[in-house]
Image (tube, rainbow, N blue to C red; front, side, top):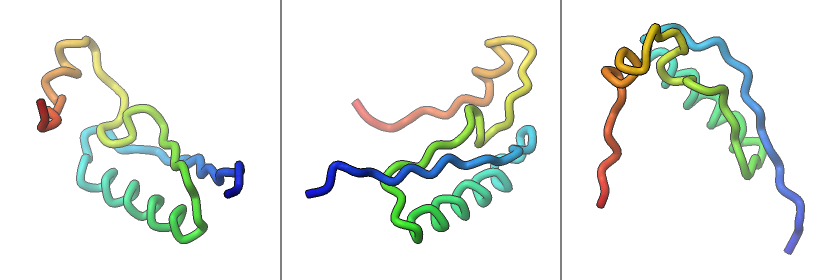
Length: 69
C-alpha cells in the first residue's frame, strides 16, 4: 500500500447564486480530477453559491439541510 495521495486543487470563479451552473462546473472538475486518479479534490469556499452576502442571516436563507440524524 502506498502512502502517497494525489490532491486536485480546483480554481474556479463561481457565479453568485447560479447554483446549477456552479454545480455543473464542480462536477466537470470532479470528473477531470478522478480521471487523473485524484484521491482528494479541494474547491474554493462557497463554490456552489458564490460568496457575497451582506449578513449571516442573508447567507442562511440560502442554506440547504443535509438529511440525517
